[in-house]
Image 1 (cartoon, rainbow, N blue to C red):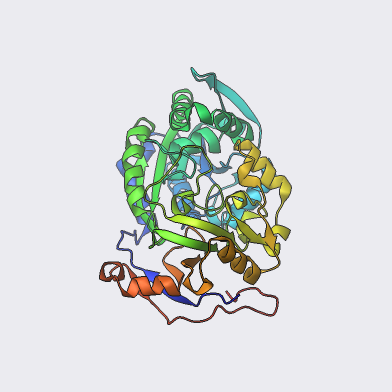
Image 2: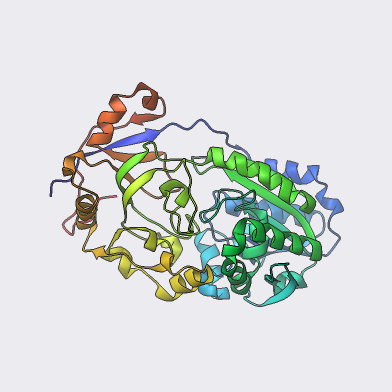
Length: 419
């Protein structure tokens, strides 16, 4: 099969970016009078999740230093539900792959799967919290606010989710996910409120990233501000979220997926492939077929989200850690995201097959986009049909520019793309 030629293109995003991360954090913490909220010698648990947040090591290092400056004794606590195979060692390994270590942040790192039930919601949902966190004198929550990949609501991914699911470890995450059909949008913030009421939350640091995957905004929040401020920040985050530049796509080629990129490996707000029944984002692209070529190194074999693809490669399949994947997807309450789609021998075969099963269209006319992952959408590759559409649309040209001319896709002798 003659594959379509592809051209490199770049999306133009005009978005805010913080130039001095440390200075901004110090300013925010000073506004909320951090020194008045902790006492000398108190052990404060600072949360660290599994997402690939830009500057996360610097952010945690600055928070740790500011807590130490007011006399506290901070430590990093893993806050990632069942990720890392639901083991302390696996979760510390996840942090290490994100550049988070005792040396990089200036504080010890602790991890444990032990939890304690601290309350029950009216729906019968038990709320669990890490025992190590309960043994601390206070909690400092660090988290990125963004649209969730499973559901839509006033509160989605952010500080409240970090409390309810991240610090709930496998047991707490499992309990929340099991009751998803009661309504994630209601249960998650309610569980977060229970934790706020029954523990000492020192403060929260809400992070927003722009379409370049750079830190756009940082806000220090008091626990009583979490709900209302997260609602406002979520609306900002939705507008900052990068999107694919074309609405109708025959084939989307994703070079890599992974837990460091999204909770389900690929951001469903970008692909439109939600696994929860009834969820839909009118701003997402409509894609006929998705091909995943590989797993990210940072995902450590966790292939959750591969089930959202139509095809993959033998290389990706061989990297799957089935135990980590199944623990994560079953904790999430979905076997679907942990499924393995048909895998082809290499990139060339996977892409060619995706084009063939996307419909009765000549390969050269296929509307195909290739991206590195759903988090990095500034640079992408578009097929001949999409180049023609771009050149015919002045409005589109204001936000998408060609970087190079169309050329044949280059494969090595094994049939894998040069990347």
